[in-house]
Structure formats: C-alpha cells, structure tokens
Image (tube, rainbow, N blue to C red; front, top):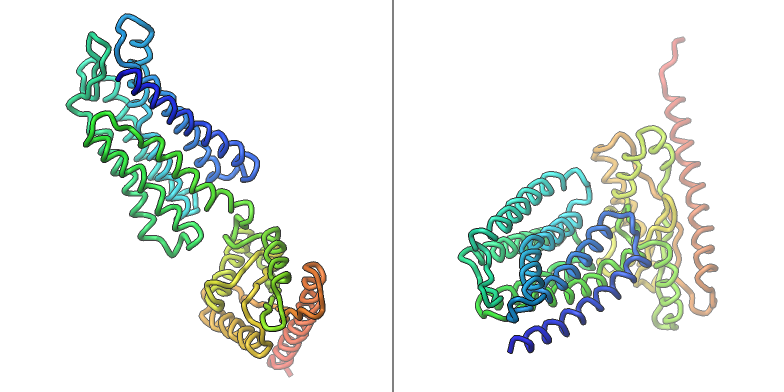
Length: 395
C-alpha cells in the first residue's frame, strides 16, 4: 500500500511537472518576460513544480533506517515551509490584474511577507513540538494538532483572490475574468477533500491544471495585447482583419474606423508622458463607451487606434462616428483635464467586391483619416484666428 501510494503520487506529479515545463517554455517565448505579470506567473509555475517534487519525497513512508526516512522528513518539512508561497503569488497576480499600478501592491506584499514569515517560523518550531506534522519511529507521517492552520491560511488567501476577482469583474474585463474566477475552484475542492480524507492529496495537480487554463486565456493573449491601454495590438488587428475580409460576403461585411488622437505630442510635451499615457487610456475608455462590447479595438500605432465593427451599412457607421464625436465633446465640456481631446477619424464599410487585402484596406482608411485630420486642423486654426480677431484693442 505504501509503495502504491508513492507510485501513484510519482505518476501524477511527474505528469503535472511535464505539463508545467511545457507551459514554462512556451511562456518564456511568447510573453513579455520583463513584465511583472509574467514574472509572477512564471514564479507560480516554478513554485508549483518545486512543491510537486517535495510532495513526491514526502510520500516515502516506511522502511525506517533507509534513505526513505531522509526523503520523507525533508519532503514534508519543505512542503510546509513553502506552503503559502503559491497562494500568495496568486493573490499578487490577481491584485495586479485589478490594480496595475505597482505602488498599490506594496502594502499587500508586506502583509504577505509577514504571513509567510510566521508560517516558516511555525514550521521550524513544529520540528520540536509536532504542531504541523511528526514522523514516528517507523518513518510514518502523522498530522499534527495545527495541521489545519496552513490549509486554512491557503483557503483564506485563495478566497481573498477569488473575492477580489468577483468584486472587480468590470475592471478585469471579460477576456480575463473567466480564467481568474476558475483558477481557485479545483485547488479549493482538492484542499477540502485532502482535509476531510487522509491520503488524498491532489491540490498541487489541480493547480497545474488551473495554471494551464490561465496560460491559455491570459498569458497566451498577452502577446496580442497592448500593455499600456489593454486593447489588442497591431499584430492581432491584422490577423483579425484578415479573418473579417475572408468572411465578407454580399450580405455580410464589416466596417473599420482608424482613429488618431489629435495634438497628442503637445499633451506629452506640455504635461509629461504620464499625462500622455492617461490621455491614451481615456481615449480607449471613450471609444469603448460608444461601441458595442463585441466590437474590436486595437492600438494601431503610438496615438492611433483601429476599431472593427459589425456594421455593413454606411448610414449606421456614420451614426456611430457622430456618437463618438458627441462623447468626446461631452468629455471636453466637463473640463476634468487641462487639455481637450480630439479624434481625427477615417472610416469605411469594407466592400467585398473590391478584393482589397488587409494592407490595402488599412491604407484606404488611413488616407481618409488624414483628410479628416487636415479638416480638423483647418477648423482649429480658424477658431484661433477668430479668437485673436475678437480680442479688444488699445485704440
């Protein structure tokens, strides 16, 4: 029975480690390794693999006086030492999805360091008092009186991350929310089963599954997401537009809007790059408020965005353009910032009979956008000239 338990753990854990290694190498290639989000995610993979190895060693019950006893002791001891690292990293990962600014993470990090420090101290003292576990003369592992404390802290940390996800679902966005909400469910179920039924320990294997889901739904998407604004990047735009062109027919096509943020260089030069970044974020929020949730928005370039809409009618497209202009005008009237936002837009319904490819259609709406930009600039210049002419003279 003892050997069977070890063999079962060995098979399951090695399989989980191989899965995590595949995710690890793909994550290294496909994600921005310098971003904190990717560093936290990769750290979770590494800690999980480490804990899976410790779990294998901690199953070496029996055969006292052999190397089994050494493996059994150190496997269980190190498991309790690192026990809270994984849920702590997950809480930080979720917190970063909700609050991207790093300074908001410092307080949480300090709290987690204290919690993990207390856990490590208790795990060390447990070697003398048997609080978490003890191993008898026959090299058999037994739970200590405080065995449930680390498990309870794990549940609290994962539960806090889950609550943070649920209460901030609008900030996270649909494309990330589902995987963040799913992540804690398999581990929590397995932890409860492990507490209730001695010998069942599948929580780490379930974490490997959850990390795989997160990779598919978030990490793998990060290579198609603009890190600053949260919308898609140009690479994803071109792939998506290619799909839309291929699917276009006489009865069903699409529209595209190329948007340029007017006077963006002036905002950057006058008020600083932080204010410029904020202006880009504001532009995205205004666009999202005017478009449907299913519409596609991507950052085309520095201060340019492209929206793809499920509109086949030019009249409806022009109504959407009018809605965007009205939204920008209302924002400027509020005067919440020392500058005004302005959009120059080129837009068109894709004509499937033109057989334009992605590059040609983008160039088409780009030309229309610059025409609109010249009109806007001429209008602004006229306003400035009229304002000067209306100034009182000293005759």
